[in-house]
Image (tube, rainbow over all chains, first blue to last red; front, side):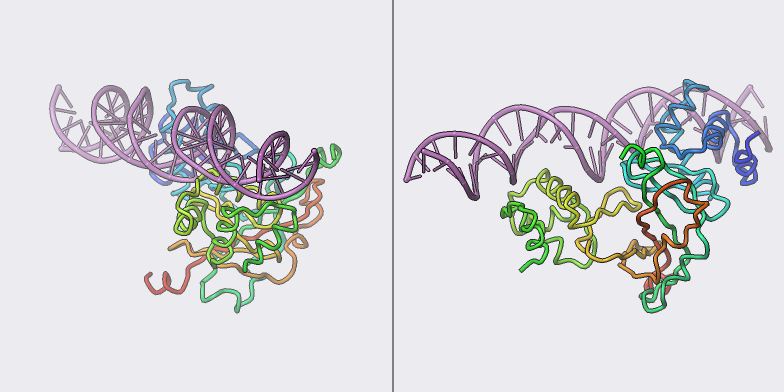
Length: 139
Length: 139
DNA sequence: ATCCTAACTTAGACTATGTCTAAACTAAGA
DNA sequence: TCTTAGTTTAGACATAGTCTAAGTTAGGAT
């Protein structure tokens, strides 16, 4: 049973078969898929599912705050079902592998007042880069 | 005289009129333009400049390490001529205004060893989000 | 100076990613 | 059953960026 589906239902969101398949595809993964990858995987269970429904559904889940949209390099956005708790991302510069990570402290605190240019700063996300164990071995 | 042009020349890079215009357009700005914006502005000085040359030139300058490519939300990449010293970005969630900022300390130090999953972590960039003074007033 | 070659530039075709539209379908209440 | 709002669909459209093939240019060799 998908916990994401439960959370979505609380928003009085109609849980159609299409939306259920998309939510379960997202949540069942430990990597962050692109919309096209989600379409491809969801179509294995529901072949008539359309591209537009996948894009619409992902955008709506982002708007509801139940999943995160990640804009990283490479061309396409990726979707992270883990919107619950603060986390950052660690990306391998060799192969593109991505991991969720947790940093100590709040990065907002590391930004001095005179660097804020009058902004109210509400959040911060950190993208760490390096080489994963496999790519270190290959180098 | 463009300092970026000087740095590019050191890479034995042929400085053509097109490349000079692109470099000077980049460097003259305090905002980070998209490739299309650079094309548009550079064309004011050199109307026959082609889109392909702008994209090629920007990609080559990124590969040489002389400018930074920023992948932020919104659909297009932006280019930052200030590759020299470490800095992060602060973005207004209201209007999209972006500022370069400097945080205290090195974010790599805030990532505990057991959160590194065996990666060698070489760098980190922080994206701060909030509301600029104008958007606070409007809210 | 002229030739040669490699580097550079160009227009436009092509690809990838994502949005929009209009029509059809579905579910729930009157 | 009828109505209505919400949902889904195919495909057209939009945008960002890359590729290709041909033409141009710069600079070294003769």
